[in-house]
Length: 217
Length: 188
Image (cartoon, rainbow over all chains, first blue to last red):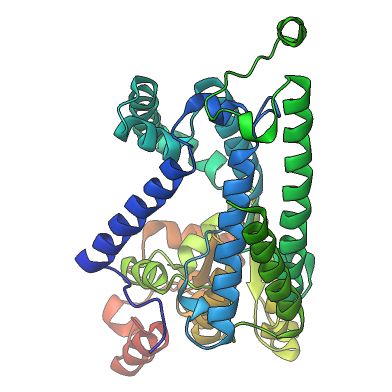
C-alpha cells in the first residue's frame, strides 16, 4: 500500500486539521506569529521567513521525491493545482502587498490570532472578508480567473528537464540562499551594532535610513 | 540551532539532491488527473455539444471557436464539417491550451472524439467539447433534418447547404433501426 492513504471524507479532514495544527505550531516555534519579525523580511533585517519557508519547501520536495522513488508514495494521486499564469501572478502580487501592509500572511495571521495578538485577529477577519467578497464576485471574475491557462504545469514539464535535476537545482538554490541570507543578516547586525547572539526576535525594523543612522550613533 | 547541526542538515539535503539527479523518475506519472471532476462533467453532460449547437456556433462565428476533426486524412479529405481543421489523435499530445479558444472535437460516431476530449482535459484544456453523435449526427440533424426537428434546424440546414426533409411525416423519418443506431453512437 502506498500513500496518500486518505482521499476524502471525515478521516481526510481530520488528518488535514492535524497537519494544519502541526504547521501552525512549527510557525509559532519559528517566531512567525510576530508581524514585526515577518516584516523584517522586507527590510532585509531578518530573513527568518525566507529560511523557514525554503527549508519547508526543500524538506517536502526531497521527502516527496524520495518516498515516490522508493515506491512509498504515489505522486500521481497527489493533487497538483492547474496553472493560470496571469491571474496567479496578479494574485501573488496582491498577496505580497497585503503581506507587507499587514505584516502577516494567512497562515501566520492564524498563528498570531491563536497566540492572542490583536493584529493577527484583524488580519484573519480581513482574510475571511476577502474570501467572502471574492466568492460573491466570482461569477463576474470567472473570465479573469481562467485566463492564460497552462494546465497542470510543473517545473520539470515547464523547463523540460528530469524531475531529479529540478530537485538538485532547488536544493542548490536553497543552500546558496541560506548562505546569502545569513550574510545579509550579519551585515545588518554589524550596522546596528548587534552581534549574532544579541539579535532579538521582535526587533522593530526601521525603514527610515536617517533613523537607522541615528541609532548607529 | 548549533552550527554543526545546520551544516549536517545542509550536507544531507545536498547529498539527497545530488542523488535525486541520477535516481530517475519518482513515479510513472507525476501529473494528476481530476477524475472525479471529469466524471461530474460527463454526468452533467457539459462535455459535449449537439450537432445543432455546433452548427449555430459556426454560423454565428463564435469567438475563439476551433472545430477539430480527429478522423483519418482520407476521411477528412472526403468530407468535413465546414471550418473544421484536421487534428488526428496523434497530434493531440503536442497541443497547448489557449485561453481564448473553444475546441469542439468530432469523429465519425463520437467515440474517438470523446477519448480525445479526455486527453485534452488531462493536458489542461478547459473549454473543450466533443460533438455528440459525431459526423453521423451532423449529417442527420444539420444536413438533412427530419420533420419534427426544432424550427431552427431547417434554417441551419439551408445555411450549410443541407436539404431539410420537410415533406415526410415524423414516423416515416425514423425507423427502429436508425433510432437504435443513433442511441448507440451517442452512448448516453
